[in-house]
Length: 281
Length: 285
Ligand code: HEM
Ligand code: HEM
Ligand code: SF4
Ligand code: SF4
Ligand code: FES
Image 1: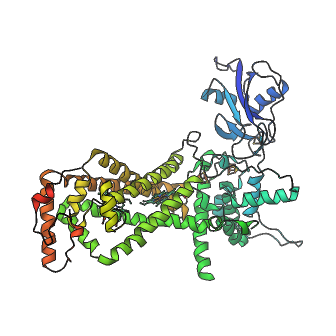
Image 2 (image 1 turned 180 degrees about the vertical axis):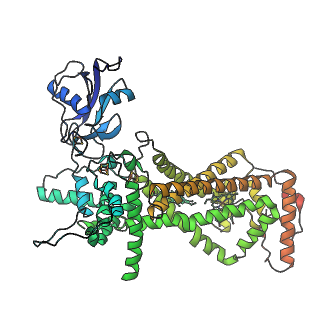
Image 3 (image 1 turned 60 degrees about the vertical axis):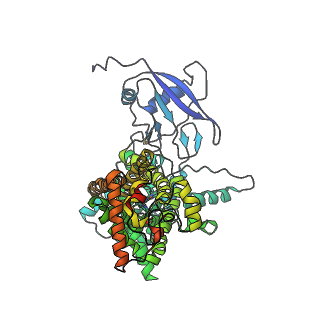
């Protein structure tokens, strides 16, 4: 048997920023979970859910969180762990205790509306992908045959961008990306509210993930056919110009996607595009 | 795009405004600052060398205010005020993410605000903001402004720099402006897409650092040189040289006599001779 470090604690102290429902006040709660080897934050949350009692013995509702793949490919479990946004499924308790032996601090993401406890509504992130048309349109019932060939070099350049899992870490860490939380008005239908929400999202910063996806699809030989539309979206209000070059996005991205390269490439495309448009009209 | 029609003018033209803000930082504002610091540092070659450069600038004569407004004041106002709008739209988070670029993001904003305060005060201190007699004589001078006299360039600038507080303000102001420009050129290269890959961004960063350190040295040399002309024997010598240059230029017919651009016009006789004692009798502030 591998002997674990002699200093393994008996308990793990966990502090969670909780919130019962959207718009409600948030509050801290402290839990104590029996230490087991190789725990991650999700298994800690599972122990809390199994026995939702605070460190000072109060029975409470179980802490709500989101997760799916448990191997850092879906992005659903993203939250702020010890002050840094990341996936909780790959946040190992042993590593976290090395950082701070006293406790583990869990907070929901800071830039998205909280639904409950550690669950947030990340729909703005997906709206941004729609805005920049982050797809290759396939608009035919007929078999069009194979697409154009791509050189290995071009594939190499595009591959990193294709790994984005829409987790939103880059957005949470970006100083230019500000939280937007709208409330449905009494006189508003669901459709009206959704439309107002989409319009508000569209006029605010799209974020580095969407800029990188626009570049990915502009590099694709078939996607290129809509390159101008994507650059147009990137120079619309809330486009690439909002970036302030803090480069936090690239430093927190769990997939190490070269976001600041994408931002500079988008800047270059925008420069060329606007000069061309100026002289073409 | 949905909802575009009821967006404000500022939102609809966000891309253009951001790009104009970025451009105006380098051209003309950054370019002006480089030339300005180089010109000022010529005082290291003696008060005469600096005075010659000032005559060159002032040979624009009646065009000077126009050039000042179109190429200097209006662009600085635009860049500065829109810069404040940009600052208000961000949410610094260096305590959670203390990365080098993130710290520089904050420093770019801090030095922008410092540059704003410094330039507003500095232009008042030396230049006086507007050339109107009632303002310059009635208000600006009483508040310690408008101290620079272009036809006694080094001596009046030097005299204006003799207080410790003023010198500290200038050192902070110059260094803030220089950092802001050097770091701004680096971010500009990303904004416009000149350097895209991490390696290219690192190389550009090295170039911008060398540029910044160089410009900081030039700026501080200008400051030290100017300060040194404002005290003791150097001051008397500077005034002597400046008055000599003035009289020679007026006699040669290449300069219109203009007592307002000389030190202490109110006390000076029209067409006075070089008067060392009169000018040097002023006590340093
Ligand atoms: C080494 C330190 C500096 C010295 C000794 C210095 C000196 C002067 C002087 C003597 C003037 C008056 C010119 C006139 O009235 O004709 C002036 C004007 C001005 N300075 Fe500076 N300056 C310094 C640094 C800076 C910096 C860092 C900036 C930032 C951009 C700046 C911006 C200006 C502006 C905008 C004006 C008014 C423009 C004009 O009068 O044409 N200065 N400066
Ligand atoms: C008057 C006060 C000033 C304020 C409030 C200010 C503010 C700012 C701000 C907030 C930025 C960042 C823009 C962004 O990230 O999108 C910036 C960029 C810049 N500023 Fe200034 N600034 C001022 C003066 C100056 C001066 C005097 C210079 C030149 C010497 C200058 C040159 C630049 C440059 C080159 C950039 C880079 C633009 C880019 O990243 O695209 N600024 N300024
Ligand atoms: S770019 Fe990186 S941090 Fe941003 S959403 Fe994609 S995977 Fe997450
Ligand atoms: S580089 Fe731009 S997008 Fe990335 S974190 Fe900084 S401001 Fe946000
Ligand atoms: S659960 Fe999918 S990334 Fe964590």
